[in-house]
Image 1 (tube, rainbow, N blue to C red):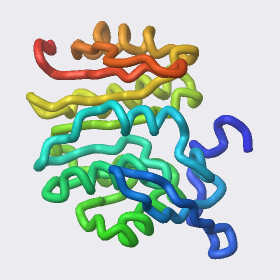
Image 2: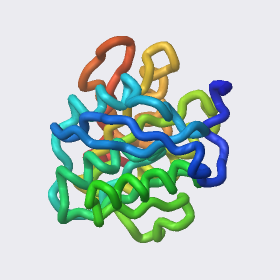
Image 3: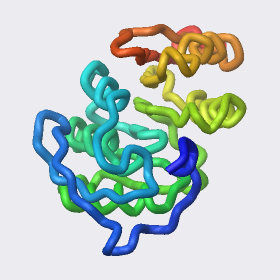
Length: 204
């Protein structure tokens, strides 16, 4: 599969394409259903693992966003950490959304809603946004995505993004501050990946 293939909409996987893997999420071993045609379809990638390991627990209530959900590791972690919150798992890939719905149902995460971007009501504001953004779709597309979602943080909301240093984590942080007016800081750097923290405090 080419670098960008999994970012394009794919139909839900056929039964023959489904596979199961065991993944540790939120301190638990979880059996996941996944398939080819989604990001990191056969394992939990290092960047997402770093995000899940270093970001503090999300708020207990409110709307939480997993931006670019793939097969759902971030959404499931948010749902387990904050069972009273509403978790939005957003992706443009219908196969990813189908897998996230399957995995949320199997894990008893009834508070997960997996939808395409346009299905999130415009008035929803997020107490937390967690994302391993698809940097390889190109800078203009990534900027467009973040311009759409980061300003939808609640006044006291916090976003965490994990981005490869070699794929422009530092320049992305500067762009968020300059173009979106949102304070951004690097909270950790491990194995070539940065975790960025974005807030609305002091935003224009």
